[in-house]
Image 1 (spheres, rainbow, N blue to C red):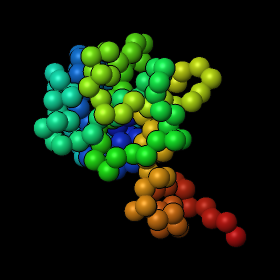
Image 2 (cartoon, rainbow, N blue to C red):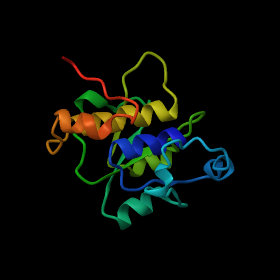
Image 3 (spheres, rainbow, N blue to C red):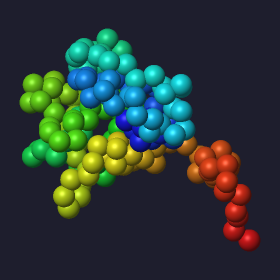
Length: 151
């Protein structure tokens, strides 16, 4: 979850909702090195689809399933809730059936959950017309120990 929190901060995610009990058990282990949990507090929910409906968000399941849309061909909704499955399992069929979109990341083999979250959020960011790719973005994004430049 620490890597997911860091990615969420990098890609301007406004909230994280999770089901199950894994995060509750793992939260005692500090892996959130950028302390993103102070800005984006993960919220436990019992029904992720109900959350999306309450917030008027389109649901985008990210899963390696036949018939899913390849991520490079996907147009992200403006207001979306992304549904990721467990690292050692899959999103339940009943949840997939209720999602507005199902996409997959084309790879040879499967990625872990944190890597998948990073790729999907990066794809969303690069397809966003609001983001300006310039030196201001670099300065705002880099680590405090990085002050190098191209001469």
